[in-house]
Image (cartoon, rainbow, N blue to C red):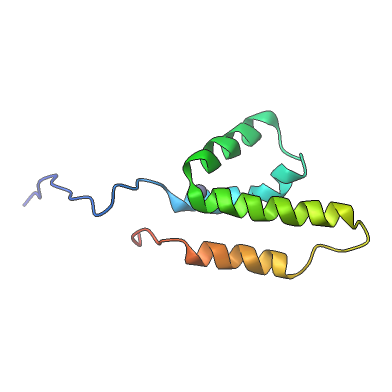
Length: 96
Ligand SMILES: [Zn+2]
């Protein structure tokens, strides 16, 4: 028996949060200008539409700026902790 294609969307957000995770992995490289133009544009386009990623990038930028001001300081440990926290606080999409 075939089910029809009636698929009530519970939320209008068709945003793929797995994509966010990919963005997060690249954000630090992005801020260090280690990425090519295409990837940079991809990230920029993403954060324009994705509030969690946007605020994450703002936080990252601040942290990176602080690190650059104090080159003797290693990147603080809470930095990656903070990222994990942000990912965990993201609304979860339905499990596969
Ligand atoms: Zn995102």
